[in-house]
Image (cartoon, rainbow over all chains, first blue to last red; front, side, top):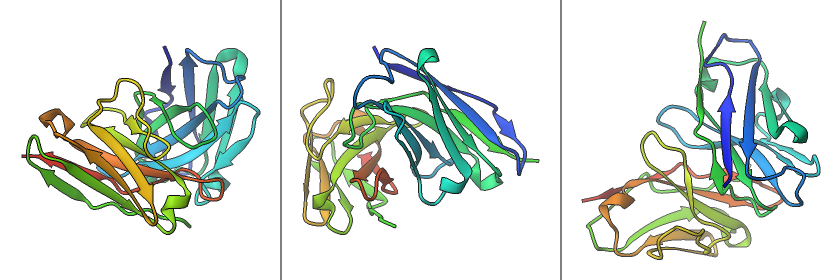
Length: 120
Length: 107
C-alpha cells in the first residue's frame, strides 16, 4: 500500500525559503522507473506541477519556477525534499507530493497535501 | 510554453453521459491523464496513458486522445461523480502540464 505525506511549515514570511518534506511508504525510490513529484494548488485554483525526481536522481523542474526550486531525495529515509526560495504571497497554496510509477507522466498516488500560507 | 485548455464547467443529468474536453496543440501526440478532485480532497487518478483505467476506477470512466483534443467520458453519470476534473498532458519536451480544471455538476 503506497502512502505519501507532506510536512513542513504552515506559515512562511515573504522572501523566506520554504522547505517541504515528503515521507512515503509502500515503494522504493531506488526502483527503476519510479519518481516522486510536487504539485501545488492555490486556494480555489488549478493544479500546477513544480518538480519531480526519478529513482536515478534525474530531476525535472517547472520552467517558470526552476530558478527557485531544488528537489532532492534520501532513499534510506524514504523522503523527498523540495525547497522553494524567495517565497511570495502568490505562492500560498496546498502543496502535494505524488508517486509516479514510470516516465509516462502520471501521478497514481497523492499525499493529503499541506497548506502553506505566505504572509508577513 | 505548452498549454491545455478545459471548459470551466460541464453539467449533466444523472444517468446521462458527460464529456469533458482538454485541448492543446497536437495533444494527440502526447500522453494525457485525468484526475478527479472532490472538495477538500487530494486528486485521484481516473484515466492514464490516454485511455487506461487504474484499478478501482469504475468502468463508466473512459478516455480518448486524438488530434488536438483529449476527452474524458463518464457514462451513466452518478451524483458521486460531481467533482472537479483536471487533464494533464505529458511528453519529454513539455512535461506535466495541467489544464485549468472543469467543474462537473450532476443535476
